[in-house]
Structure formats: C-alpha cells, structure tokens
Length: 352
Image (cartoon, rainbow, N blue to C red):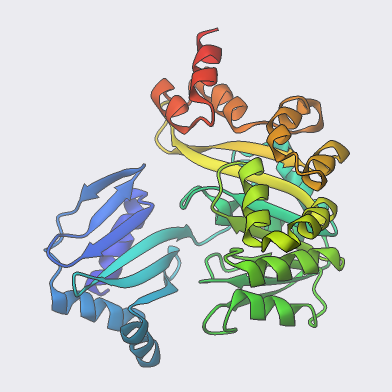
C-alpha cells in the first residue's frame, strides 16, 4: 500500500469527509466539520507531484499542468471512493479529496422527509436537489436512482464531473458518463442523451445557460431529469434559474419552468449533538398549482408562504426542519440559528 493509499484509508477509518493536501503542512482531515492535523509528514513539492502522478494517467497529468485545475475520482478498492480536485496554489500543487461511500445508502437511512421518496415514482419533469458544497446532494440523488433501479425497468443516464457513486444495473440499465473522459461538457452530454432513449437523466450540476436550457428541454420532452444547484432554498433556486437567462427570455422560461418543475429539495448538513455524525435539515417544495402560479406570474416571494401552508401535502421549510431537529435534541441551538433562513423568527419559535 502506497503512502497516499494509507492516508486515504486512515481518513475512511476516522470517518473523515475530506482530506486536504498542501505543500508545507501535514495532510489535514475534516471530521464532523472540524479540520484536524494528522501525524503524517509535511507534504513536499515533490511529494505532492508524486501523488498527482499516482492518481492520474500521463495524458491527464498533462491536462492538469495545462489547465492548473482538474476534477476526477479515485478509489480504495473495497473501501470507498473519493471525489478529487487537484489544483495549484502559490505555485505548488494542492489536492482536496471528498470521501464518497463505496455503497449507495438506502433512501430510508438518509434521514430525509418521506416526500423525497415520491421522486422515485415520477415519470417526467425536473427535480432539483440544492444546497451548499458538502450538503449531501450527490448522496440523495444516488439513493433516489438506486430506488428507481430496484423498482422499475428504465434506462438511466448520468452525467457527472466526476463520477462519484458507482451504480450497478439492477432492473434498470444504467450508463454513467464522466465529463472530460466520456463527453466534453454537461450540455453536450445532455444534447446527445436525448438521442439515447433515456427515461431518467441525472445531471451533476446545472452550471450555465446552455446546460440549464438543455435540462429543461429534456424535462419538457417526457424525461425525468434530476440535477443540482448551489442554492439554499426553493425560492432562491427558481430565481437563480430565471436569472441565468437574458431579460428578454425570462417570461418564457418562467412559463417553461412552471410546467416542468416537479420538486426542489434543499438540504444542509448539521453537526449532531446526540451521537457523532451529521444530519440533514431539508426544505421540500412540491410543484402544486399554487407554486406553478407563483412561478408563472413572477411572485417567487410568495413561495415560502405556500410551503409553510402546505405541510399537509408533504412540504416543509428549511427553518421548520431545523426547528424539529433542535426540539428532537439532535442539534445545538447555535447551529440551528446559524443555518436558519430567518434566524430571528426561528429564535422566537425555539423559545416558545
């Protein structure tokens, strides 16, 4: 076992979510949100370069040296996978590893609301899973696809940068395409996916206008499309999508989005105080006629109220979810208020 493999194995054994390699300091592990130094030697310039060459074939090393940034994945066989970003800082190489379990967790073990399981039975439309980096978006989407894989006979195509969870065909036929190796861009992969007879398309991220437009078109034409955005709630997600478009096209995209959007799942991970680990707080917006009217008529500001008054339909706001976790004794008051959309309002609710 190489020095790097030993380090990554140690990270997995410690339950670390991230490993950071920087020249001039020992490797760092992030365990339950806290960065911790390791007992490994200080990383040298030569050591960091050797790690990159161990992780990548020669042609991708050349690509990295040319572009100065590269996303890819690696694995410790039988233990787990890592999403990796290699980059330069202060003229030297730095590497960030994000741990990805080698097995997809069942949906029921992710502490997500019951409404999330409804996505499994959807046959068309756009479903967005949003949140900050490291909030568990990829894990949630992989679990939904795994449920579809066990329940239905469908053709699933994923477009990922890089591939994180390795999905094995069960009832479904699953193809996983990695950006950079299997197709050049998300938008290109989406364009060609429509000619590959898919039922479900998973898009790692809607990064730009071309990808967003292609995803909405795919959802319009009878496919179930799942993707992610780095937004913190449903209203912000819808505004972000609309704002990607030029002003002259925004009325049209509101109408398209109102017709195609099925659900927005916004999540953030909070540190547990009852047991070691993390737990998600989740906002759920399902596209009811009231939500569709808000989108179509540009009354996005009313969506939080629609969510609050539609709990009986399975919706919930982020702050409601955070409040439940606090009252259950699973998170601290400080974390609850720090992650709330409306801290003052939640503070009053927690005192009630």
